[in-house]
Length: 201
Image (cartoon, rainbow, N blue to C red):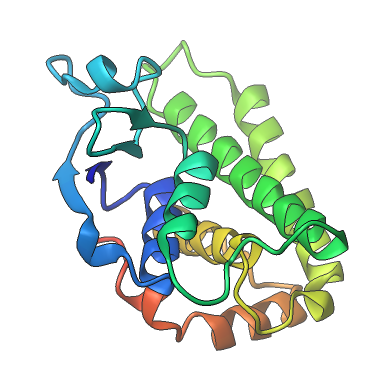
């Protein structure tokens, strides 16, 4: 399997964490890809032009991260990170949706901020910032229910909080959120999280 990969993408980090947790990471060839490069061939496999994109042995390309994560999970042995049908499954998928939505908002904000002066929308960036803040408050309120188990939801939240530390360290999300901070501190010691850390500097 070939994964179009970027070390700084939280979506890539999420799927690689799933691969590590499920013992299938060694089956993946990682192809560094800059989706913003004008000459990238990424759209040939993923018309959306996004990473991650996973090309299978038969040439099929899977996208985006929720689909790739579930596919990689299906290849592993032992307990799935996707709970079976029922309340636990919906709770895990809901967490993944919250985490992915936070990443969407954070990345939109970064992209807007990168536009030339005079073209940026402060109101748009603030809308994205507030969306992330509200989601963090929800996670703080529900931190006691996150537990120490591994699901697609908890892995996605870990990847997202790691992304906030990476790209928005000047806006410390931990302030006023002691329960979420404590949960993250425990879970961030997992091998899958440490092995997928973005580059420093």
